[in-house]
Structures are given as structure tokens and as C-alpha cells.
Image (cartoon, rainbow over all chains, first blue to last red; front, side, top):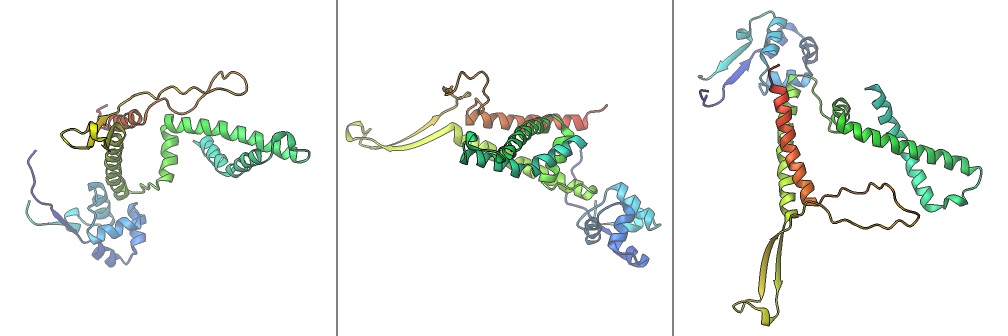
Length: 75
Length: 193
């Protein structure tokens, strides 16, 4: 398996999209089936969601995954 | 399972009555208990019997029934897996707990199996003029020495008392069980059906 040096920094626009929709963290959490603490962690960038949760978020905000998430740094 | 939830609640709520029965039996000889207190005593004694029987059943089911032990120990250890982030956290914390427990067991095994002694010997036993001797020895016995117990009232037919293993062998057993169960659970989670 090729070794990947360093850690990729994944940024997201969840907070921005949530503000545009004018919903609370708890409401978003209920919609995507997670706890509020997870929404807080996602917005802070301290937790990277699974592909499944990322798709659920993108579907909820009616956008694409690559619009919601972006990678900083090089591979 | 619902029946085990009922047993769990009974064990918890009937525990004060068990304590009362134990303290009462130690404080007052049974033959001195007169009516009407005798009725209460009988109820408490039957409760103690039922409580102990159910406790035995519960402890065995904790060992043998995965759903019972998971349900019970999840609550005891406050394990919450409400979403994927919490599942990930539980995984990380479990790994740390597992490894730290293993290191504690290995350390305890080490101090239980090895003995270290520094002693001062008389002048005539001095070696090259040195009177202080240090010795290290390995004390690894698997089974505890049989303890003879004499029954005061009649001959004992069956008795369950303690585990007939030494501290070292018990710790070694726990270390090996820890390692083996990890491998078994890992294998069962990753095997291709």
C-alpha cells in the first residue's frame, strides 16, 4: 500500500449552508440522524464524516459533496 | 431481553432487604426471633435465597449471553453509540482501555511472579566481605495449595470457595484471554461470509 505523508485537511461549508437555511444545529442533527455534538464537531472541523453522512448532508442542503467539502493541501 | 431487565431491577431494589437480613442474622440469633417479627424474618430470608439464586443466574448470563452483558456493561461504562462519530470515539477509547488494561495486567503478573529481596547476613556468611545480599527469584506456581477446611457441622459434600489458581496464573490467564478474545472478535467481524 502506498504511504501517504501528512494528513489531509478537509474543510466544509456546513455552518454556512445551515445559516442560509436558518436552522439550528439540533434541527440539522435531527434531519441527518446524528447528535448535536456531531454537528458541532463537523462545523468546527474536528470530525470528518463518513461518505454516507457526507452524502446525506449534501442531499439535505441540495448540493454536491465537492461543493460542501474541500481538501486543503496536496495529496 | 426483558426477563433480564426484570432480574436486574429486582437485584437492585431488593438489595437493601438483603443487607437488612444479613445484618439482622448477625445481630440476633435466629431462634430468638419471636412472632410477629418472625414473619418478617421469614420473608427476608426467602428474599435472600431468591436474590442469591437470581444473582447467580445473572452473573452466569453476563458471561454467556452477549446481549445481556452488552446491555448491562454499556450502562455501567456509559457507552453511547448514537451516531457514527460516537461509534468512532468508542472504538478509540476501547483500544486505549484495552491496551492500558493489558499493560496493567502484565505489570501485575510481573510483580506477582518475581520476588526481589535485599537482606543483611551475619559476618560469618559474608561473601567477599559484603554483608548485604540481593536476590531475585521466580515464583510461578499455577495452582493454589489445597487448603484443608474442617466443617463444624457435618461433612461437606459440595463447596465452592475461591478459585484454585495462584495470582500469577490468574493474571496470566487474563492476559491470554484478553489477547485471544481480541483475535476471535476481530476474526468474527472481518471474516467473509
